[in-house]
Amino acid sequence: MQMHEQQASLEDLSMAMRFLKSIFGAMADANLEAECEDGPWESVPGMLQQVLRFHEASVDYPALILRRAARFARRHSLRLAGPPWLDITCVEDVAAGAVYVVPLDMTPEQSLVWDERFLSRLSDQDLLKGFFMVNFCGRSMG
Image (cartoon, rainbow, N blue to C red; front, side):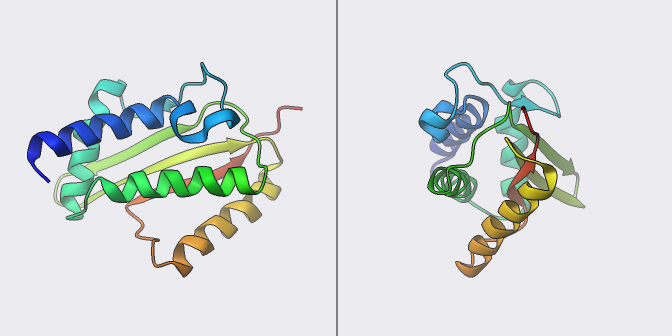
């Protein structure tokens, strides 16, 4: 992938993580916007690029994992409970990774079961790489 194509893909990925409707479809309110723990959303493509470079990975991997998480949530009729958040760690020459946490309308204990099922599914398909994770957490809204 050419450098400008990867940058465009990173920007697309960042926008998809920020505005959930593009990935989660009807599950997400049109104005539901994720939060970034590490700075403004404009800096996310660059931080993701650092993570991918550190792990010698393509932008295709996090995009695939996001699509799988959305499909898993839809298939099991899981309801979103507020905005997800993105946490990116970039420590020069030591570690790099990103976690996208999706809150579900259920107790934390219930969400652990769904999170484990999702991660197990990724593992069974040899897709659990660890440097980009989507996790589900409980946040009952009722």
